[in-house]
Length: 238
Image (cartoon, rainbow, N blue to C red; front, top):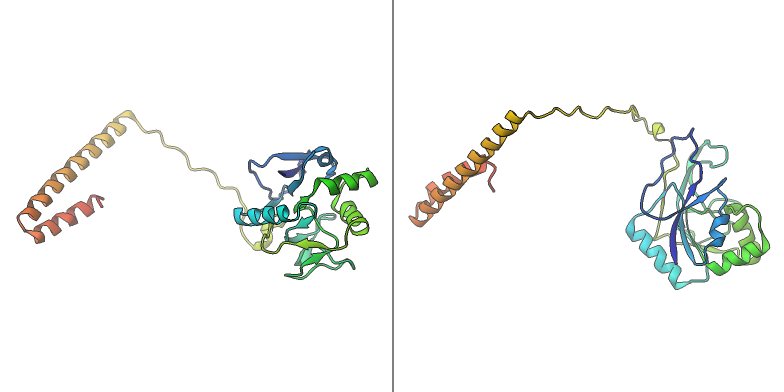
């Protein structure tokens, strides 16, 4: 089983769309066509470029895939904008759909049509799909084929949710103006020497106070030892 992240061969220049940078190996796609995946001789857990998932969810998802290695499964994630015409939805919906085309409700176990945000592809199912269809390998073509040739029920793994980053942050009302990084002020050698001397004096003072506190404790003068503790605290000694 391989873990891959799909990635557009050319990232759209006119998009402010958030995406994930991580060490997961990428599979680069032209026009979001997943055909290159069919050349990989292994089962695949696939994440799209704008889908985030935490470790626990990914571990759960992989375990569920291993439990049913010949069965496609999907993780739930929300849609905030359409992916075709890129306009905002009135309210978020779950990506996956029932057989009548309506979006599934929270907790609904099965879907008929599904997106590729976080999905498990058994190698045997991909091979069967490519034997029937050599065209554009998309969520629409694959899930339509799967509905007709394999099953109209694909399980949604609700205890392994994913997060879709395709939404417009400015809609939340935050300012998105880029901030300049703080200017670095060069430290002169004389300043560095002064800082080093001050640090040495501070260390020497603390050592002297520690010896003084030890003497008071041996003599049973705990009130004086407590006063020394206050001096140590002022110098940052814990």
